[in-house]
Length: 558
Image (tube, rainbow, N blue to C red):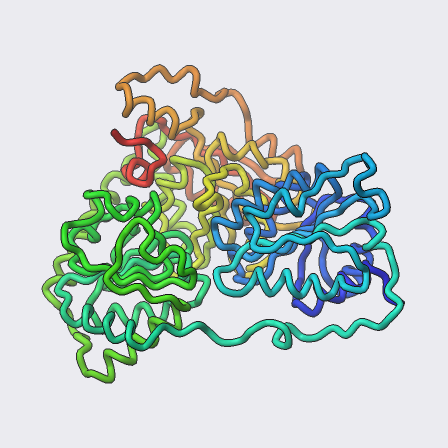
């Protein structure tokens, strides 16, 4: 007769889970024991919110299921911000939450709260499990929901007497392909043909690849489509790196809108016309009369904010391959360089060359541009970047380079919750042990989860945390300047005397502070070579305003 804990552990083992992020509690301890018997590592964090964000970070950096297990009542409630974060990012997370014993439900039990109904809006699936024998069924259902269609978080609320109970029958643990659909959703053939016709007639096509392209694994097909159509590819979200930076059709960050404003056709693949893309109507992003092809696995976003000429509901990789096949069948692919692609590529290169000039300064305080340039050069192609913070994220998106999709992970995503960079970096390193992981964070966002340096030290997880320390809430400060012209920074300031390097050392890590731009590279090397979780506190000027931060809406525009 298997116990509930054995059923949960065996179900997760079948799902291929390797790590479970948690904060210890009595009801979970028997589950820990069963997980460890099956070789699944328990990563005990310092807060439930950090544990859930770590599961999210693991999911984003591996495209696999991230799992978090937390305590009853406040423990489950504390993961709600991270579930919302994962929901809006389309990240497959399975949350296991405790509940007071079923026999005590609705009797004013200590720590009782109906979390499964509380989180319904920002999970794809949430259930209260009432039977020990059905635990495997519920784990299967929650995993299937998390990993199919537009992916997202799920939650199972498990009363203590259900997890500790016994099932008086044997449980059959099927492999995931027995209860989860295989294959991809292909687009309607007539819509594919209409898309092909628009592409063939287009003179200035631009592909905007969003996170959906990353989750689908569509980047190879997108590059082929770009070459066939001579379309530049602008990327955003997790799709940054979908096309190599040095590719002649590289179109930069889509959130900057450098080339979309000149396009006569936009092919949006796994991208949403949200605030970061100017709600589909901002004149700094889009010209008049631009045709739109919109491809997404979630039909509810097709035509949202921006009317489309062809909307195709389907998997990004599958639909893109259909369009490629149609172009090839009709022999209409352009294949060779066009005047548009040549001119647009020159525009992109000019933009980035100007940025490099801004980053060349040796002045102090250090320019944010210089920090990001040096970090990019030091990390090379092997680095995996987790971005956290406002201005910090904006500068990083402009200067860092991705050579593959998912190499730059924006931790807060569409939800905008800062402060979870360190736990996400820990998870990214666990999921990608062969990569050097750099958490690029601001001084404000860093301290929100800096204590997780201790977690990294405890488990021997070497990440490098680079703090862009301008000693101020930078995006708020710059927003004030833009809105009023005033530089009254007192209310936005953070204390200059705090020594983050010493904080890191006190928790078992490595740390140092950098004031001279010529020391950035050597400090990064010492941090990486230490083999410890490290903090490099780089003191930068607060007087530079990232152009991307304005465009993205980090800073409000009149």
